[in-house]
Image (spheres, one colour):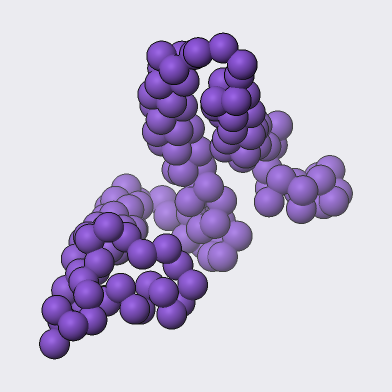
Length: 142
């Protein structure tokens, strides 16, 4: 989205300077976190405690970046896909829309947590994904 907004003429840009910074935040953060953790992991000295500390900080940073950038990305997607959607003047409609989005997200999380009930280890292998530790063996599913 950031690269696409650079091509749009100045008067019609949907993303301002602050929005561009928010959209660049996750990629920049994950690149920095990768360089930090990989650099510490392969250092010549014994920095095990520093690697652990960096991993914890990277995990906390990931959560913060996610919480900061996700609402703006969802707003932009709604604005691009259906511009009238973000122009609701009533808080009732806005809260209803947010409730629907949260409900769909909650259903997705529940479906992901309950995957052993309807997916087997072979399904993950067949699709080319890594097998999770709690996948159900095909023989146990019968």
